[in-house]
Image 1 (cartoon, rainbow, N blue to C red):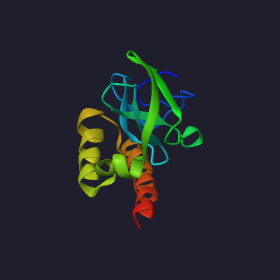
Image 2: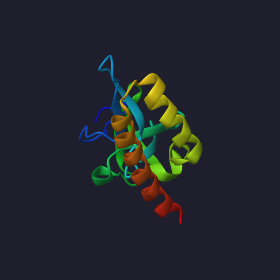
Image 3: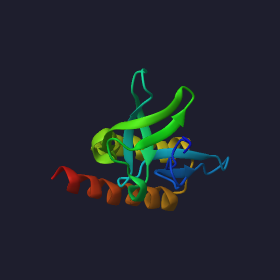
Image 4: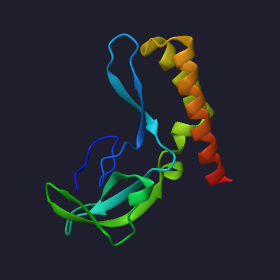
Length: 132
């Protein structure tokens, strides 16, 4: 198991939404998928390391083997869904930031901006269902 930003630790599937910059074509991680989960892992004798990401299909349980880190193999000591760990990414405040970022930084057309924002709204709705 390896760690790669925005991808599942087990299968390498994307666990973050991305946006491709309208002018440069550079792909940017935008926010976590609402069905992703994040494990806190620990190598024996070392401080915990939070944030090993997983897709829903490969979500670990406490006690499972985690990724091998530079200090050695790890064990999962905690698991949080994206709705908890990354709750800010689904707030109205982030939504306002996202709209400006898509327009000003990403230089997307109005249609492309709307497509990304509509996906975020659907993802936000999925997270709100978790919070009740």
